[in-house]
Length: 603
Ligand code: DGT
Ligand code: MG
Image (cartoon, rainbow, N blue to C red; front, side, top):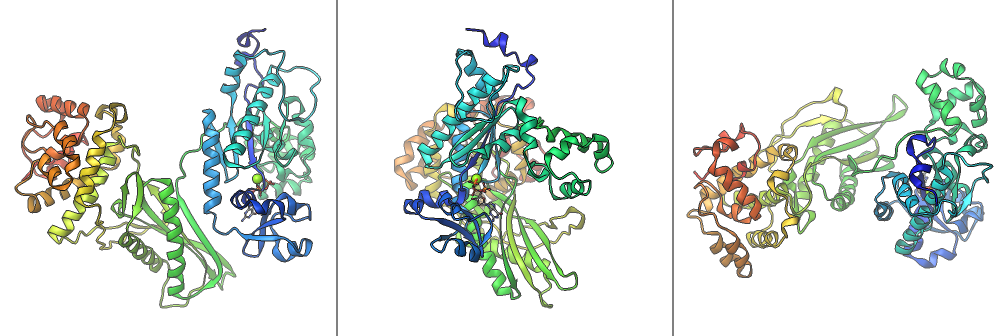
């Protein structure tokens, strides 16, 4: 057996990468079929408005195509079973589950829309090669064409990638019941384009030396993923219609119509060359929903549409788990003068305290939802002059920014977020304080941003005290490995939340001054609120040598390592930047953001 290191050295490899492209068969239709298996044996169409956006393969046998009018589809197949697919929630959920399975191979996975993914299995292939007889590697699935001679070792690598693709497809089917197609190649472009060659529920591999021939079979330049409608138009104007035409046209001719870089890129694409990396997909930058319709011209109807969108959006945001801090409202106005429609957006910051995290789940109370609706309608009023008639054809809602914070239980920020809501209750009940916050209204486009101050009591009623005590007890049950030491905390993440943290400090002070004097000891509080948790809190806490301004309850709830770290800092204040003398909370504002900030002096 040859050594994989000597045979497949990356530096000598012309085609070092191994990429798998995954496409789920008749995606929306499969989600419905998995949910209701009786649909598997009948022709099924997924309807959005008056269009069949996709259909199962049974229906495709009748000639039904994607985005066909319902009336046409029913003419072709009167027995077509139609399911409404306007609510994308379950499709999105299925897409996320599939994505999670693809990640179990520990390779970069890039999501492309809801039903496509790229997986870069280059490293995994290299690993497997080390324990594989390179003379005896079999290909799984179809091969685009038999190779005439070996290349740089890429054939064996791609064969192993085809085996991984097979495993991926099997796992997705076994765990979720979805059949999928896969394309295997040394780059993303070829992997994507070869994927649908054997549909459904199959896979195809292409070796690099067949790239030029394969690309020449594509009838339209538009088939190349990165070529959009404008580029296609320009190419057609130069009589470049097919990919074969693009292969033949000189780069000099292309340079007359495109930038030099673009001209070279087009030439490379035409012969199947592409070196774009598979970028690991993270969480989306914004989460939004839109609803389009013929016309809506009455405010109450608009409000109903937003209400419905908000309910659906809150489901999505709960599944996402991050706390939104910015909300955008989008409208599409029918413009009689311009004979066209155009979109306008406004967005504003929203208070994170509208949301609470209880048992790891993001929730919004009914009053929080009302406040969100108030904000939405205020943004709407900014966009529409209600003294004049209006005609809308679309409304949209999106959460556009999220709190940057560690989401695990071990996050100190998470810990403090829970505290914000507890303190809010005290603040509202004991102080009768109508907390006024200013919100920054700005148009989505930075060039036309405006700022308006609005009064809005956004402090959110939240879990009652016993819940907090239980929660503290829970935290104390976490293992040491579960809890990050303060030294591991990312300072940036804390700084991003500094406003919020100042709010915590202020609320803590207010509530303490007015409602918790004299203060009960942590053990006593536990005893009165939830006796079964008393031992957890009382045993762990030892704040005898803490400075007098320290909130003992908070200190006792911290893991031992943090307590030790703080005590060390208190012993040596000059090196830690901690307040040596008792100071007002305002003076803390100017200080760097350290864990010491959370220990607010009593007045
Ligand atoms: P396939 O991959 O050929 O077996 O069939 P699908 O249905 O998976 O088609 P695909 O991969 O192009 O699109 C994935 C899903 O996206 C599809 O199930 C429905 C939706 N979709 C596709 N094209 C459109 C479209 O033009 N409009 C709308 N609203 N949805 C679309
Ligand atoms: Mg698909």
